[in-house]
Image 1: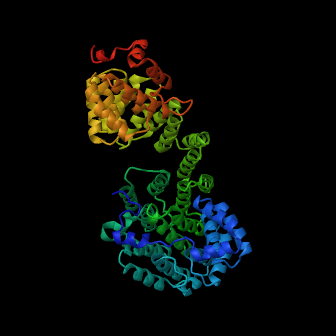
Image 2: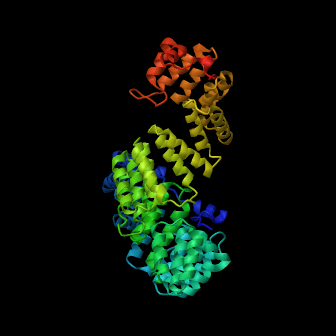
Length: 581
């Protein structure tokens, strides 16, 4: 059974973990800041925070803090902005000042714990004021347990893990970290027993849980069992990390236990666990706090680095995301994942050429990894480099297993690129091959059917395909437009009207759909409405650009002389003969 990346946890746990603190600023403190003449720097920092521009926010809030060094609101914002950038050491002094002022701050407490871990002062974590230094119920409990491990008291740590397990909805987290703690102390048998309980339920908690169990089984000298766990958890989807593990296990090598070999690594895993659970459930900047602290405590925690970079990408901080992705060493098995993430961030930062360069280099390093070639092909297709896209898809298909569930989509994508290159026989072959693998795919049915309509070839078959696509996706404007258009091409104008009107309802500002509705209106004698739709279509085409099918010059000609005259000039059949021959 494939691992589920922490998405199969009890619902109550989700409720408990999604209750997050707020970084919103107290109104009284905001007023105090303004009254002290700090409005300029404070408001600029606040604006930068809304834009997730953490560097600018840290700068502006620090300037304001210089003028008002005791302002807790400013201190909290400086701490958060520095932590979001990964500058934990810069956040520590401010967090200590904030704590000394008696203010309770979640982000401040995260940084304070991080400072104590980096100083290896686990006793300070154990003896902290739990009420004043609260972070999160789950985090606080796991911190206590791992701090006891760091202080050398395994028995106290196990008691703490068991206490967390008794809280409703939190047992999976407690058992997972208890297993890691046992393994870090050399008790691999006890750790394996926890993973094996309830038919291996804990193993399916996340990718990292599965990897931890594989390492533990290898430490027990059970490489065959570890290989079976690898197969069960990940199926046939092997990335370089998994391929490396498989090769070493098959060679009889004992894998090291690297997930959490020390108390510091264990506490880093605590922060990462919460970040992974909240990812997609809480605000990205909130999740980023935990991911950044995990990476700061364990720089080799590549999953925390990758999650931080992904969150920054989603927040629109592309340059910071790119920099974070580059922290993953080239020698690390997950380097390919970091480079693919960096390429995506470059694309989103409007640097497609740089993204292509990254992916081309990655294809050179991982030529047999289909996903890299697929990403390159997709990017080149978006850039309308269809020949390059076809070459990339060729490489991907060469190395993709015939049994792969995503092979149909790759054939579909290559078919699109071939169609754009006017290599229709090859394109049609790819589309039909994709339909063999996925007979009811609305995307493929629509694209192939629409292409046949445009070529006035096999129109009856095309109509059947598009009707099946509409049945599967009745709210897709593109597909409904295709149905209206094939009816128009078949000369069934009256039937086409309702479908084209529905398509315009679904996609009111699409130039192609509006242009098509204009043609249909003209065909049924509604000329004034046709002219209105053509004018709308023109208004939706950006200046100086065509839209492929929505040719602005052709639309202007239709407005000047009418559709019948345009068809005559083009040597096309008159409307009332469209269904003949």
